[in-house]
Amino acid sequence: MPAGLASAWQAALDTLLPQDCLLCGDIAGAALLCAACAADLPRLSAETCPICAEASPAGATCGACLSRPWHFDATIAAFQYHFPVDRLVQTLKYSHRIATAEFFAQAMLAGPRPEGDIIIPLPLHPKRLAERGFNQSVEIARPLAEALRLPLDLSGCLRCRDTTAQASLPWKERRKNIRHAFECRLDLTDKAVIVIDDVMTSGATLDEFARLLKAHGATRVTNWLAARALRD
View 1 (cartoon, rainbow, N blue to C red):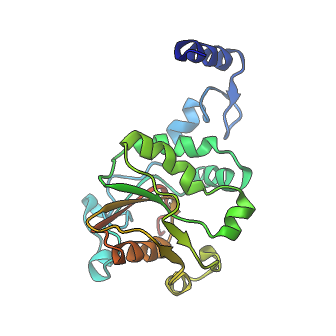
View 2: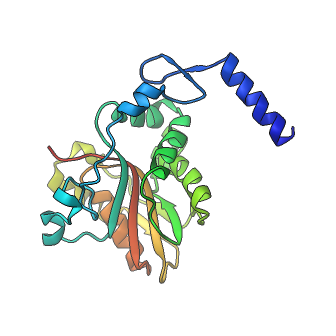
């Protein structure tokens, strides 16, 4: 079907069969959310630490990052991990609403965009990948790589240990839990890597992954996320 005809056909379907908003159930047309719900999502403030994306006055590097440097160099996120963004993330991961990944990707593209040479989604352990059927970070990363015209690597990094879920552990235990959980088969010499994930909480998992990437030659690692969980 010619591109113009396909576009017109899709527009007609959107008009005749509009979808309901995933959050409130109102008519959303072709979008995942209605305009009101999309406008109400908790965007991440510009006043965040450029390294960890925690709240920080005037967007300065926070005291925690100054006193204990991370292996990654920067973090960018579209939303705060608060209601209803948490519901959207859970819908993506556990209800197989893959369209939510595209929604997150477009929201990320609407904000600051990192510079880099390659995009790598955070890997899932094969056991969890088999249970879920897909890696949500990969699905978010696909449209980002296409928009930035950057290579997307899906096989060079692996999660080799099926660790205890980070959310079930105290913050201080998470770094120990995730140690040596990943493998990398890539030569990243002189590469700036953009790591894609859905949510950053303590940062321990992304820090361990960044440590590995730098051990394989990466000069800079930037986390690009759908959402950031902020400390109260």
